[in-house]
Length: 183
Image (cartoon, rainbow, N blue to C red; front, side, top):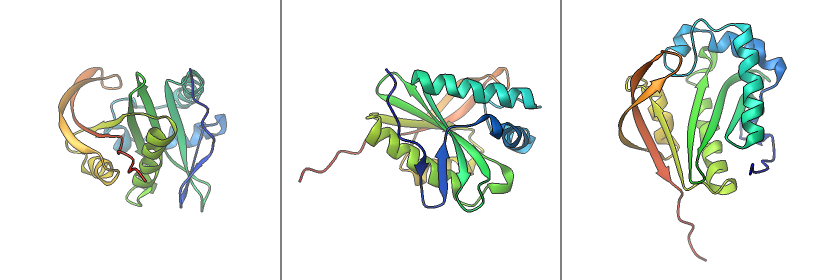
């Protein structure tokens, strides 16, 4: 049964909200850049407007079913969509974090800020026991984001990459829910 999440989620500089149909053009433009898509396992290239619209519709179905919570990452200062972040529920005890930030917005701390808020959501509101994330071994900015959020390297894994139509090697990071101190 899906959990009711109070939206939008907020951080100091970001708003995390559901993707909207009006985001399709920004998603197409940002996700359609090969320099972004090449670091992901799920974004095909080329990426067109129909794919963006279909992706947004799919995220609404996943969100409603409580399988995957996909958020637009929006700058509070400019209102620009800067990326997308998701938490995929793997059973009732684990959630897998996934994210991308458009090239014009990278290296500004947006991924770390958004990921930190979604990890907090996973542990505090969804009562997830473990959060994991994976990235390509050469994607140092991504594994640095994971480390800043408290995830630790676990192992190298092989995973099917739908956008690449092949299996790829990834670095798996994870963290267990922190134990609450008794008062």
